[in-house]
Length: 466
Image (cartoon, rainbow, N blue to C red; front, top):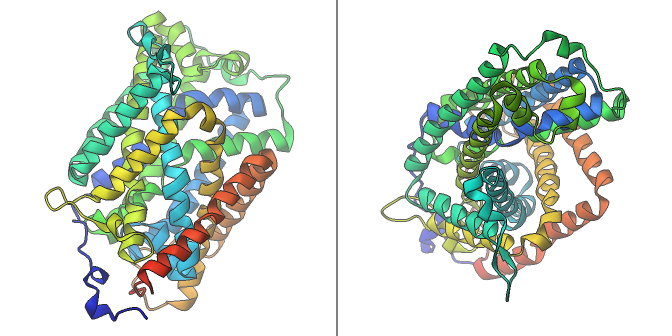
């Protein structure tokens, strides 16, 4: 029989301090979304649809769908502004088991895989420069074959983990400064392209004759834009550390997505001003190819540097948000209580951060075996995007009394559109990679015996107080 709450002091745990303002919160949204994809996806999209008009239509539709999701999350986040974000909303609407499986998926698969992918992406971007060619050489032959790029990725993982260990205020200020720098660099890239005599508006009327085309091609391009816009939900995971969340969260989520949309469209337009459709589709890095034409090797180097900074800022947002989910579950006695530890000096979820860093390091050490399964993170994300968005209907029906500083405009239509589209992306993910998706499902369900063990060890979970 579990002890009464008065005998379990960890049922009333300390809170993380609310030290993030609206500007830092917006930087988390913008900085986490914009990684390397802004410079790379134009190629994939052009191969899918074959014309600039359809590329822009895909960007607009993908941006609107992401905006519908962000608006839905803005209502949930301003109503329930606690650490853990989606975990909190799912637990309040559907109970402990779905919430635990969400936490387990993010803790064991999605976030460590994302961190590993981002850091390796950073290493490969830096290999563009001659000074970093050593990253592609072997560091160790036995017992574990190891490249210097993996060693570098592990070092960067622990640098960013250390920054967040020192407190979210420092990490938030870092995010703000470097997100502003990232935005400036992207605008400089666009400005160079539009100011160049090498560009032509006639490129916008060119097409790719052998594109996939049709509904299938457009859906593939749309999914590419949704991947590019991915990451806006990370802010809700640190909602417990945002000042005036009833105001700051909707501003950051909705305003941040508008900023991202403008930067994405400007970059795509700048590339197309320099390159015709066929060259965009044939170039591995369209932005690098465009700046090479405009400014030669130095231009290409500038884009590579902008990509590296962009990826670096994305990593900070990913590390920051991921550690808050197991922290929130541990506070509710739905995970090992050590994860609820708050560093007495730095006021950070220190244990969660360290374990997250360890899991990411393990993946990086065995990257060659794990790399093919990075899509598991994508599968898990859209499953829980869909589930989380449905909770807005549950709360509207069951808890109409809860204060809602922000109400999603267009309810119930816009949240319903997002849920349906998330389901379509999920089905597409399953159909496109059945083996990986089945493995992802198995890894999610693997959380059930872990939940059984946690319940056996800690007894009844803390009550939902909201």
